[in-house]
Structures are given as structure tokens and as C-alpha cells.
Length: 100
Image: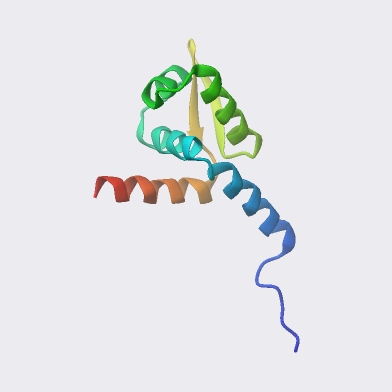
């Protein structure tokens, strides 16, 4: 039997890292907020999630570390966006289901 792997190991490892990062409930909620809000910044996010700012910053750092989100400085705010297309599509489906 000459069965080929359906996905290469490197690609699976990358998806595994990203899925592990979004597997935490606070990070999933963060991503849903980022997807729904216009120019979400850290203070908006921690207030919406009713979590201390350092907790939200730590979760955002994990998402940035695996290239799921990026931050841009807009005047005095650091604004977050989802940059990973696979994760963005998944989050948009979650958001759409919640508004249906």
C-alpha cells in the first residue's frame, strides 16, 4: 500500500500551533471582538471582556507570536486586526452564526 500523507508535516504543525493559540476561550472571544469592532484597541477589548488589561495583553501577545493578529499604531492607540486568512475565515463564520 502506497498511501500518501494527506497533508505535509510542516503545514500540519503550523495549523496545530495556530489552532492551539485560538483554543483558549478568552482568545476566541478576543478574535470575535476584533473581527466585529471598528479599530479595536486594547482598552476597548479588556473593557468588553471584563478582564484586567495585563491579561488581555498577554493573550494578544500569544496571538501575535503565531501571526494570527497584528497591531498598528493609530495616533495614540494600538489597533488590532486578524491577519491570518484561515483564522479570519473561521472567526467570521463564528461571528455570523452568533448573529443569525
